[in-house]
Structure formats: C-alpha cells, structure tokens
Length: 275
Image (cartoon, rainbow, N blue to C red; front, side, top):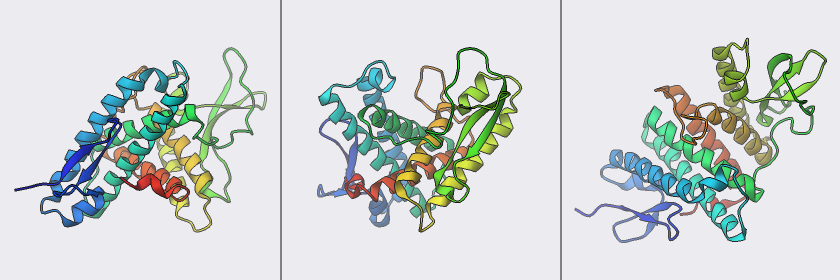
C-alpha cells in the first residue's frame, strides 16, 4: 500500500511531506486524511533529528559563534531557520490536532531545533532585542555581590516577557541568565528559579493570545526566554542537544513556546509556514 513520504529539501537543510502522488502537504493536513496518523509524528521527529545532525555538522562552527558567516552561508542559515521553524510548527500543530501528548523525547528534538534556529538567526541579524535590552547596567570584571531577580519587562504588556537580572548591593541591575544562576552562582535556590522561569515563559505565551499583543515584541520575548531555558538544559557545555531528564511538562512548554514564536513571526512572513 502506497504511503505518504518525506522528501529532502534540495540542500538537505530540511524536508517536507508529500502525498502518494508527490504533492507537498503539511503534517497537520496529512494527519487529517491519513489512515495511520499515529505513525506520522514519530517519523517526523526522526527526520527532524536527522536534519539537525546534518545542519550542525555543516554549520557547527558558525552556530557555536566560532566565526561569522559569509554571504552564501548567510543565505543558507536563513533557509535553515525557516525549514526548522516550519517543521517545529508542523509537529506542534499536528500533535495538538491528534491529541498527542508531547513526551520528553519530542521536547528534546523540538527544543534542539528551536535552539539551532535561534543560533542561525543571530549572525544574520534576524533576532530582535531581549526584554530590558537597553535598561540594564554594564557588568564589571570580577565577582559581583547581589541576588538574582526575574524582572517582568512591562506588567501592562504581558507579551513583553521577562528577564533574569542580578540586583547588586550598590543598586545596579546587571544582565543574567538562567544558566548563570543554576551553574555559576552560590546561594541560589535552583528549583525555585526553574519554577519561576517556567511560570514567566507560560505568562508570555498566554500574553501572545491577547488581541493587542504585538507579534514582534512577543516573538523577541518568547525567543529570549526559550533560549535562556534551552541553554540551561543542554546535555553538555559544548553541546546544542537538549536534555530534559524525562520532564514531560518541560517538553510541552518548549513545544508551546516554539509554536508561539513561529506563529508570531509568520504573521509578518506568511511564507514561513509553506513547505
């Protein structure tokens, strides 16, 4: 019996689904018409994982910040992020349509793809500012005394996100990250910091659904908070692979955040979701 199939993009930066007669089709549409939709989502994740291996092998030095891309590489990074964004969106939408529970493995693969997309967009100028970008003090060299605080960018605009800062004893507010608090700081209640970060990211995702939410501001806020969360959950300091240690709630949060980011950006770039 003929089945729909996966077709690699020309440059192997991603893939798309095709019907038995070769027509491109999105995964959410495919699960509506296929006789065995439960088989499609695991296959999609496997292919996405394979695409990530190819991408990181080809562009690992640039994604890791070792050098800046040349013009041709910049075009490829744009195609890479668009492919990964689309494929993550298709998985999230298809999982929701079929009532599929997002497990830890799905969260790890989608999380790794979201991180690679963010790292691909940064060197070609497609990432906007993080929350509070122009409002924080410049850090000084050496040990800093203070405490970590997750600051909401604008309580009247819940879609504007939040960001970790260090409030110093001399009154400054210095930029911080979740990784810094979890791994490089003393006296931090790590479990509480993780709970606070998760809650703040959920609040930003919820704010995105408000009719007055600005899609650019929302995408920037979600991207930063998701990036901060993902960087704190890599399986090693030199790795881009995400490790969730079986936490299904974190997997669902990562998929929801990725979906929100892509949907906000697709409102300004409708072609982002086309296979």
